[in-house]
Amino acid sequence: MKNAILPILLVIAIIGCEKDKAEINGTRINLFTSEDPTIFKKSVILFDNNKYNIKTPLDTFLIGYPFAVLYGYDEMKTRAISDSISFDVLNVKDYMKYNNDSIYTLAYYLENGNCLLLDKSRNTKITSIVMERYFTGEPMASTVGRRFYIENNLFLETVDMISK
Image 1 (cartoon, helix red, strand yellow):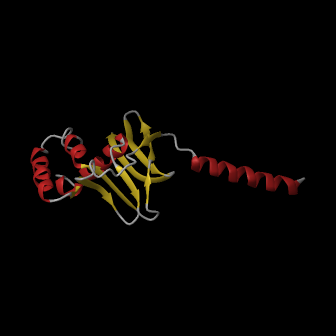
Image 2 (cartoon, one colour):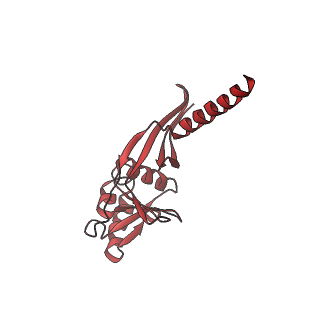
Image 3 (cartoon, helix red, strand yellow):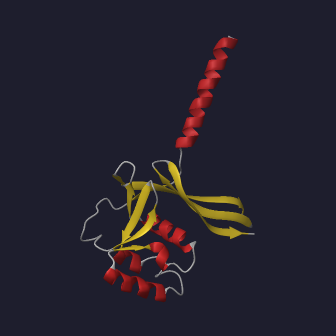
C-alpha cells in the first residue's frame, strides 16, 4: 500500500504544479496581424531585442500615449512629426521625456492591441497576448499593475500605482 501512495502523490503534485503554471487570469488581446505597407509605411519601434520586435503605425502613435495622455509632450510630438518627414521608422525612446515613459508607452499599445508583435526567432507574427491586472497588499498599502504574457511567458510587468 505504501508503494502505491508515493507514485499517486507525485502525480498529483506534478499535475497541480503544471496547472498553476498554465493558469493566467487575464484578458486575451488581439494584436495587428498584418504588416500592411499602407498602414506601416511610417512606423514607431516600441520594443526591439533579439527575440521580439514591436511596432505601431506612426499615425496611431501620434494620437495615443503619451501625447494624448501626459502633460508636456507637445514638443516631443512636434519632433516626431518633423522626423517622420525624413525617416520611415522612428524609435519610441527618442520621443520620451523620461526613461520609464517608454515602458508605459509599450504597455499602452499592448493593452489596446494597437501594435504588431514579431517573433524574430521564429519569423512569425504573434496574433494575441494575455494581459493580467494584479493587486497585492492591503487597501492602504498596495501595489497595482499589469502583466503581459506572450505565449504564456511573462514578457512585461508594470507597476501602475503604489499606495502607502
